[in-house]
Length: 320
Image (tube, rainbow, N blue to C red; front, side):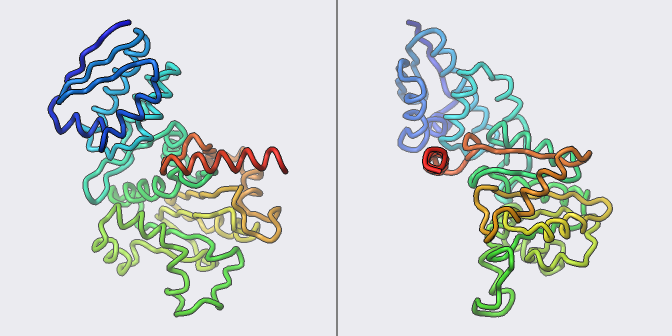
């Protein structure tokens, strides 16, 4: 057994790294059950095997770095850091958290949180077209919007265009109350929220009014050529084959395209008709197209989301 004393910079850093009501400390204790971590004020005493103490110390170091980088800490940071460090992937963890994708309107640094997210971000930077395929809660939409905002702010594109199939792939909007904007708003709300977080609500509205940002249903893409644009197609699993081909062929000069979807959440009557699953097969070897796959390990929402996804996967494997 070895002991190690860890001194935080001040009480503010200690509180942030330990979490509200010691939430992060309790998570770390669960990750290292044979290690005892006692905290008093701005000092932590770590007692356990040499390997465990070294791992806990490294997790604390990572959390302190993220705090100083003005990153919003979550239990996911604690669990994922602990897992990679125990697996001997400290270098990969450092490369992951040293990357900054963008800065929110509130000044918060946005970084990839998993190796899957890192591969996704790198693919968008490298390729003209990137497919992000995987379950809900993996940050596909938010990271794509963050990069779109970065490219726009750096004048690498002139516009951001975000689209998704409204309601169903057939876009049956006529049965919904209200005018067209009122009909489509509920289905585009996740995109609005991500953009407002990046630019601030007032600035976002001004950019909408000036047509610098366009959020529209997929049907509005037909017949257009989208140049100097960062184009994001969300919920792509609910596009038909024809819609996916139509969308991908809208791409013009100096544009970048991101297509996101979850192949397990297809709402089409005939699941075999999904444009996402067909494009995945047709384009997998095309130069300039990146395919990035997410798993439940990349879920960065509440812990329960990952548990729910794993439970569903187990159920369908056993009973279907």
